[in-house]
Length: 440
Ligand code: AMP
Image (tube, rainbow, N blue to C red; front, top):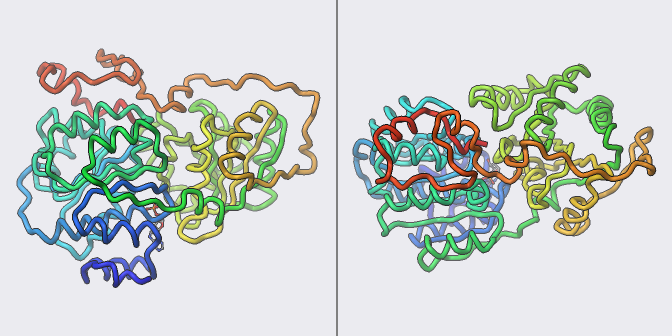
């Protein structure tokens, strides 16, 4: 199938051609015509399937078709994403695909200044990509007007719910017109997602692309059994002996991420780390340096790495296995993207056998077990409970209360923000501090 048969305009086809895409991915060939028809969509797709173009291309076409001069602060299409990194990437796609269309777009997320975002919104924006926490702050400050939203996209909706965004999303939805086109993309369908879909979507078209196709077909998955205390040594050995130049490493905790990055640096390997306690500037710099080969290893927590899209990223390492097997699929989906072959290796110690069993079940036992000579497992070592530390919060993706408390506006983890009308002017201005409480 070619893109020409999907009903897209010449401006979009030109932009697609410049990207070098020759044919639509399965999600694109199903979603694009359905979205162009104007109906709601419930799509099961994970990152790496081409879902971003799947909703961005038809969204741009529909918005461009009905010409309107965007009034100040008035948004026509809104894309909500769970993390800043994913928001930035989706926004980048909107810019690239919309290159030949007279459409203005911008992105807003927490961790950076509020004022410049408000200025951009004031100038008029057709397509807004945003994370829920910061968007709600703009709604409260009346620096954005969602009363004219024609198309709403919830991207990675499962992850947004995991991160405790549901109350923010519901409050944001209250400020939008009921009559609109809504598109929900999610990798998994828990009962919470189904409930959200029922309340949000009207007679949706269901689209499902084979869930684990990307991971099982294009990614070589290897498990290296190793002792708990020798993981770092093995990691350095693998990187050095194989001459790997670009490796994304997942660790479980924020502190563990920093510690590992430091140790690898001490081993002479150019390394940076990203996690939710790092400033947005530091996160962006680490990602850019990693993409451009200035650093060889990026150590990340699950949330911070969410949505990282580096074409031809060859190696993903699970330094520690995730608690939730689904996260394993998300992690290794950073490699083997867009038709490239990738490799995902997991360093597994005796403490992690339960997690490994769950992952093997989910991935239908596609993992090869290989012991690296010199790193044989000492069978006398007994399993110990996994240290969770502060990262448990991050692992369970609950919004951190830490920053909020410092600002005197504590919320219970996962707790509700006060309703819009209940906020005093004082708390509104405090809320305008420029910090996202939900940031990953
Ligand atoms: P996504 O699942 O949206 O994160 O996209 C994953 C990757 O696939 C991105 O690097 C896209 O640029 C790339 N991509 C999207 N659509 C296509 C296509 N039709 N052909 C080749 N690559 C694509």
